[in-house]
Image (cartoon, rainbow, N blue to C red):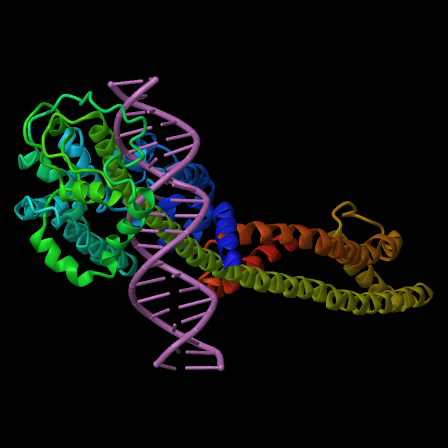
Length: 509
DNA sequence: CTTGGCTGACGTCAGCCAAG
DNA sequence: CTTGGCTGACGTCAGCCAAG
């Protein structure tokens, strides 16, 4: 696993594709693939930084970048796009694709502040939550104190189920999870806002100087220990799934009372959760609004606890999403890495075949040199023999006048041949013609051919071979992009070289 | 069947941090 | 300064699963 991850990371570095390019690479032709690499570098930086930022930093800063790279949507980042920026800024696990669970938490905030409308518009999950909220409100019924357990029980079971759903199939299930959770969260917020469960604001109580609300005034016995276990058991609603359904129907009170409803005077309507927690902690449940100091402290403590519970749930959810997102990325990068490796292998194969062809061509070229030399040798010997014969005839002719016409003819022909080969001596006397023949003409012909041919040929072979190799490299580089068409490549370059090589060789002749 | 390990989820606490 | 959100750490519980 680690290796794959590392591979993916390396691949990412090697072929920085950026979120945008990830998918594009797949579509790119091989040529495009490599050519795009340089460009992707910048994107890569942005992307990587963005990635990390998205995970750990405020998203607000990242948004512009995201906007620039729409393709990121295809990636996990799409979540980020969807998720509300502001909220995410607060969360360390901003990745959260959908803020389904977030939405609930947000909804809580919404009660107190109208700021939160922002992100929801774009967030489907939020929409879902909103839709569900009405349900919550409907459910909201000021229930008896015993109701609280019911409240909690429903929530916990929902959570459990919802979480699991989200894990298995995020996209499809998330809504479900949202639905369940919204109930809980919606309870916190929606009710307070809509339902006037709470009474008018109450001034802070001044009676009790309870130093620490930590100690339950009324029933210290319950104290903290009991509180903690009980909550768990409620959440244990997990266990009490049965109760959850019934309880949900029965109890639908919000988890937290609106702050403003805790002020002023009059009857105090606490949420079932608050009441239940107060009882669990051993605190008395206040009914009237002017709260005593101890009551206020206890209520504060309880409320803080409840909020913390919600926050913890949210935090866990985000963390889970974050991890899932990372896993997704790892998976994507792994697949991308494998694809890249496949391409590399193809390119290497193509390169190998091209080199082989180059070697073949080189061998062919060097092979040509040998036959020529042989030819030249044979022609040279023939020429020599002919020269000897001519000399012999000339010598004989000088001694026998009857043969003079023949000798003159021979000299004439020789002069003609010499003149044809070398225009320098168009009119050369018969005798000197022999010198010409022996020295300049014949030798020049053969030697010229040989010297220019063989030596130059060899040198040309080496230099040309190097040149061709370099050309081949460049050619490979330029053509490597079409790795898939390696077969075509292998044949293509071949023909090219065959065409070019003769030209190069002909230059020397 | 029981038992024990593992895992996921939860609630709580404490601490950090930013906003007011 | 206080307040409240967020999160890591801790302990707990429930469910699953393999081993006996």
